[in-house]
Structures are given as C-alpha cells and as structure tokens.
Length: 85
Image (cartoon, rainbow, N blue to C red):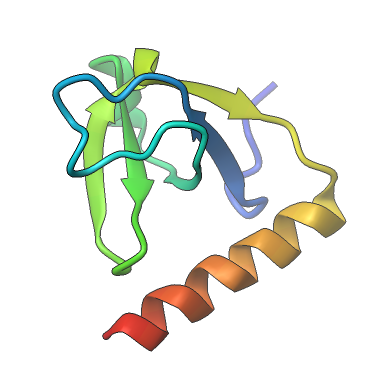
C-alpha cells in the first residue's frame, strides 16, 4: 500500500555519531518524503531552522503517531522553523 504523502511522518534520532553537531539523540524530526533518498538508504530530515538535510536512515527509528498528534507536532515544527528565520 503506498504511503499517503499528506500525513506528516516523523523519526527519532537514535544514533548521532559523526553528526553530533547536526543531530540530537532522542529528538523527533519531521521526515520529508523523498523516494530517491530512501532508495539510497537516506532520510530527508527537517531541522529547527526549516532546512532539510539527508542522513543515513539507520540513525533513526520511524514513529507512528496518531493523526491528531502528527498534525500538532507538524505545526509546532513549522512554527519553530519560522521563528528562527
């Protein structure tokens, strides 16, 4: 079954070795859909600045949030990114 790209997806960083300046362990990040990146074993992650970056997907675990929670977290992520720009 194809993923619904309109539902926000999130991943928690579980390993940041080599990326300690960019990734925070146990932090939840918004995942931006990118099929080409996934095919290469990467995830496109949105950071606090509102910029997206590619990281190895084995550094994260995907989270399954109820839709209501995903919408709230996605909104918080957007507000934080706008506040920093």
